[in-house]
Amino acid sequence: MKAELGQEEKRLLTIRNRMNRRRPEFHRQEWFRYVRLGNAWRKPRGKHSKLREKKGYRHAWVESGYRGPSRVRNLHPSGFQEVYVSSLADLERIDSKTQAARISSNVGMRKRKIIQEKARSAGIRVLNEVK
Image (cartoon, rainbow, N blue to C red):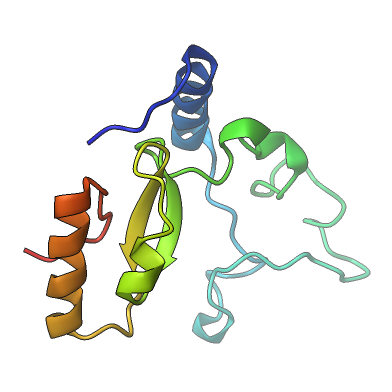
């Protein structure tokens, strides 16, 4: 199943895909030195921080110029808008042309299979389908 997108949305999705391939990984300052820091981005606030001063030899800094086009910002790469589903009632509110279901992780296997069968019969795409 494919999302019904206009020419402009298709063009913007390809631009976002190209931007995602070129976007650098943003690491926390000194993420390589201490395992306990992790590498999730944190803004450097130190007085003598070379990264805060944006010295040229330091790694990439999170800035708004790296964002994708606003019209396709929260879409799945397939073009669908993701809707979390945890019950059959949630499934009935989905528009199958523009939205796709993502079954919540706290749903058990028995209920998950029931939701998947109902979605398949309604023509709704499930993004994290279990075979």
